[in-house]
Each structure stands twice: as structure tokens, then as C-alpha cells.
Image 1 (cartoon, rainbow, N blue to C red):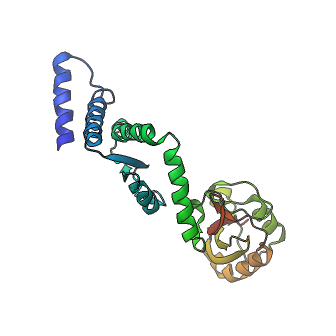
Image 2: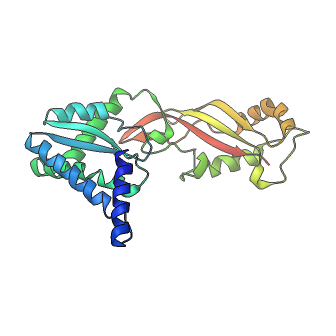
Image 3: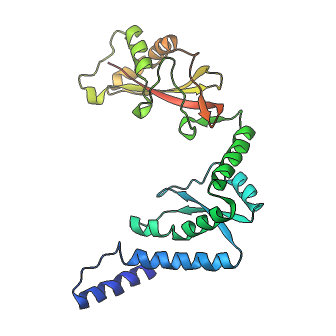
Length: 254
């Protein structure tokens, strides 16, 4: 309701003056001034705040948030997650004015590398406490890779894996091959990849463009299982630690 009132009042003013209303240059400036003034008041009251900015429409904070919070508290600094939820990007950017002011004050007091060092320490504590867990590959700093493949492809694809399986895969009699490359059948293969580079297939998720091919799932599983390498993977990494991870690779059928 407040946002709508602001838009209405500004629009009315622009009609009186004949000027075009530029929401990205007028409203955000006011918003930024308000955010900065609030930060100045909080700082005078002895508050220091470190902000971690969450992306648009994302609900996830930093992975070692608890550890960060505990360490920063020892230095008299509060930790806050700041999310961007406004539709207008410029308004989101101006919400950061509070955090920008606070970050400058933190840097003035503790040095420009202070926060980076705290992030590193907190992350080390977080990773070591979970070193035997299995992480989804996208959570990791370095993704796991199939043996011999050094690239990271879109849609969890490995060129080496695909070529190796394609060169040895025997299709069952009656399998209907696709005539359209854009609608080929495929299987998503889910792996657990250990921090030692050993892989285990845990799930096959088949998607056939022809329903009649569904009867060949078990046959194709055995074929694929036989031709995929289970050792020699490059394991995932978080910072300087190898970790267990869950990876998915997609294989397209003919």
C-alpha cells in the first residue's frame, strides 16, 4: 500500500510539471538516503552489521551462516541475510545502501580483508564438521568430473562418458530409435562420487519419446552399468577439501 501511494504521488507530480516519471532515478535515491540514515543511526548506537546478499527470489543464506554469526559476534558485529524481492531491480540495489555503509565502517575498524578472512575460517569449520556428508554437486566449489573429462557441460553432460557408452552400447531388438534429435530419449544417471574418486550409480531416470521403449529399461541399465567407469573420477571440492558428492549425468539414446 505504501509503495502504491508513492507511485501515485510521484505520477501526479509528473503530470503537473509535464516531466516524464523516472522511477529508477527518483524513488531509489530517496530509498538509499533512508537506508543510509538508518545505518548512521545504528552505528551511533554502537551497532555494526555484516550483510550477506541473497539473490533474487532465493531463500538460501550462506552455507556457514551459523559459524559466521558466532565468529562475528566476538567482534561486536551482527550477521544479516538480505534478500532482493522487489520486482524493480533498481529498488533492490538501493536497499544495499545500509549494508554498504556498514561494510565501510567494518573495513575502517578491522581492515579491508577482515571479512574475507572470517568467511574463510567459518567455511573451514563448516566443511570439516560435515566432511563425511554427501553434497549435491552444485553446492560444491569444484564439481566432480567423469574420468578423462575436464569440462563442465550444461545439463550435467559428459562428452567422454557419452562417447564411451555410445561406442559399446548394444540396443535390444525392437528398440525404436528417434528420428528427431530434439526429442531423443535419454536417461539421467545419478551417482554418488566419493572424495576418493570412486563412483556408484544409485538411480536411473529414463525418459523415452516412445512408450514402447519402456520395456527395455532393465536391459539398458545393465548395458550402461557395464560400460561406465566407477573409479578414477575427479572428486568434488569445497575450498581445499575433497568431499563426497551426488552427481547426475545425462546420456542420450539414438
